[in-house]
Image 1 (cartoon, rainbow, N blue to C red):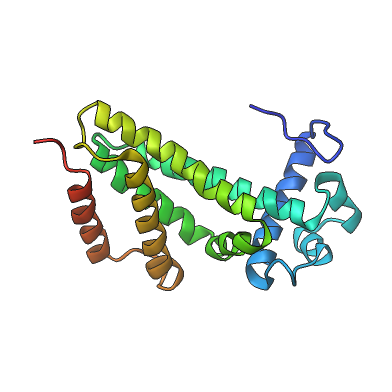
Image 2 (cartoon, rainbow, N blue to C red; image 1 turned 90 degrees about the vertical axis):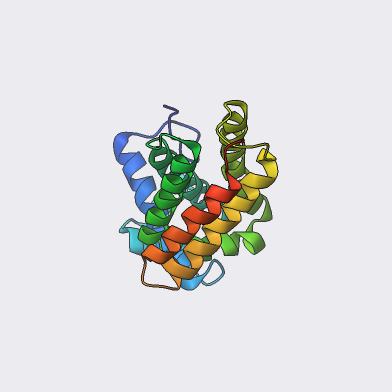
Length: 202
């Protein structure tokens, strides 16, 4: 496991890692509620329960914290999705379970969509990083599924972007704008759609 470092570049102690994580969690709430431009380091440190001066041991600026928050969320999204998908016995099962993992993560991180949308304006490079990191793993898995004969002759690059768009739009409609859960009828329709996209070769 790679050591987590502070602004000085030195590896953090266990307590330091915990404090840094508290700042990230506080930033998720504050950026989500107030937006990047109205959020302040004072507000974030108050939310995290740490002294304002402590902030600069871990992050150089508010934007530095924002970028790291997006990277942190991205890593956790990919982990949640990958762990859920790993339980599937076929590519279709893995896909549906991966979607469920993504939706469950989204339901426990309601500010996710707001933060990623903000990144498009606040930090375009990190915005692109977010989507390309998700796509890269997705594309590899689909390419392997084609090679293994689990799915037909799909284009893994295009299909990965399409499936990402579906999961994000469905999550926005029924998790963020809904009651935080995917209705059974939506899950059934997703299964039908994905079974067509990932149909095994004849």
